Image (cartoon, rainbow, N blue to C red; front, side):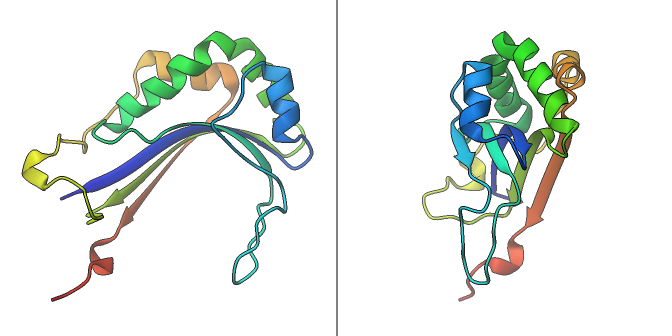
Length: 152
């Protein structure tokens, strides 16, 4: 069963912009959103500003993607922790997000026999220590897209 997944660590806030977060952390994000900046049909507006460090590298287990994200963040743990706790006090916070789409038959994806096994993963002590230090939540979203495949 093909699997498409990505992982990110985000700081989010209704009041502190991603630019302000960048200035405080001394580290630029891979992605950022501005509260109220996107409109689609029906009107969807991000409720928060966000600052994200992302790993979308294919062929890695979720724990390997997490390790790549945290390797980049660890030198900034103290600043991230301080900022995340301030954001939490105003309705914001921090999250380590894992997003997984099962049976994603995207064009160009390798056949199941050619793909590494991405299903098993774990959080080691270093990851748990980082989450505790920053006060971050862990959120794992998993989606079954088998019904979305074209027939015929």
